Length: 88
Image (cartoon, rainbow, N blue to C red):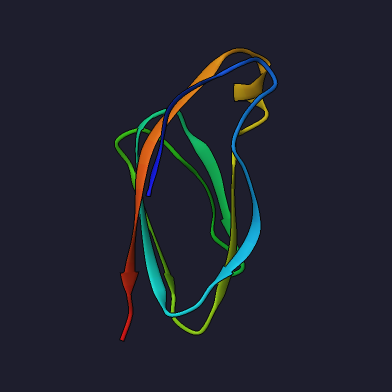
């Protein structure tokens, strides 16, 4: 899956509400921009350009991805990829 490249206006951002994954590993990598990843395992982190986020959702994990409030105070951009790995 590819996110962007996108130029977002003041007040805009990514708002992927909490949703479940079961039997997958998601790997997220950002080239530009950042967003807040939060999930039901207790992970709560900001993913930044050049960083990798790997979420393993064996028996089920619910997660959300959102643009931080500070980034919405002005124009911001986002460009990243997410791959999904089928777990045994």
